[in-house]
Length: 268
Image (cartoon, rainbow, N blue to C red; front, side, top):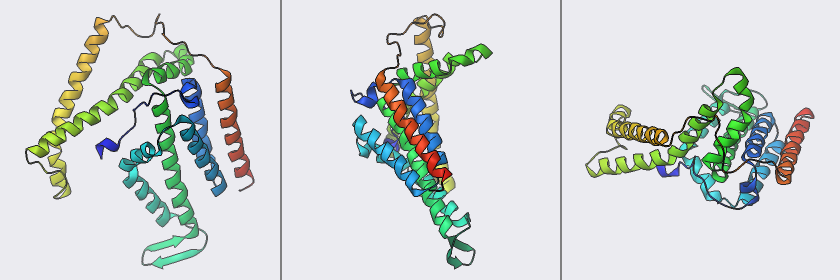
């Protein structure tokens, strides 16, 4: 299960999606999320699915990587769908048994909510798959730079997010190694009561926290040795510039958002 967590991984490539400015990708993702929350019909969700599928194909990211990353969230998606199915009223009553009442609106709400979560996760995956953590840091810092006027530590916040994304795969790999070592010593994490399985996680969490703090200390020492002092006066090897490709991507995302708004207005 841990190996299925792919958030934070970067797949180098030369596709059109890879070549987009990271600021453009962040803004397009934001527009995609807004359109996703505005979508209220099967047509709107169909457009969202087509947009994401086309972007994934253009980026040449295997669909298996997307579906594999969804596995750890499967229980949460199913639980959300079931809750919407049982507690959404409206439309025609399809099933009534004791306290269970299922309506047509409940089925629609469950499908839309599950699909929305899946598309949100896959959209985030596509961003991290096609953008390096360093590029994401620069993009976030540039987009949030107006907040510097109100004394918000923009560079530090962007750096923290970059480091967090960078070390997600490392911590997952470290956790997998610790679990394998504990299993070799006879530990069992899959059977027994919930309390017993929770106690069995203690031999994993303790060395994992020790390893994480050790890595953080080593990283801080390395940054100090290189005289790192934040974003003031810092130069960049790659200067971010918008191109015609970014403008075209903005136009496509804008059309998608406009189409969803129009469909919502007319109830389609």
